[in-house]
Amino acid sequence: MITATIEADEAAKLVFDIINAGNSPSYNIIPIIKELNENKHLTFSPRKQISYLPKGDQVRYVVTIRADKRLKDEVTRFRLYTTENNGAMSDVHKFSLPLRKR
Figure (spheres, rainbow, N blue to C red):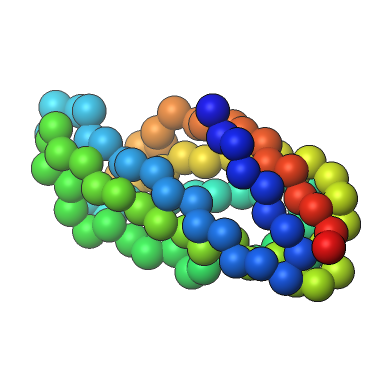
């Protein structure tokens, strides 16, 4: 359960674990975070590719979300998943976060 609010003119961190639950190593993993409301007042830190993740291992991944001063009150929806260079895609995780102007 997520219990955070992103406020205007604030930087927030989204932290999650990427786990390789498969039977073989994963290569060139790209975490994808999509903000589904298309809010122009949120920006995300650049994606970082994970070049190698052995089977059974996990890595903690951090994304910085910045809200500008013009952010308005709403609840925004996110979709989070990973892709690999072989075309494989992880399960999709959806969540919502409230946004608040100051």
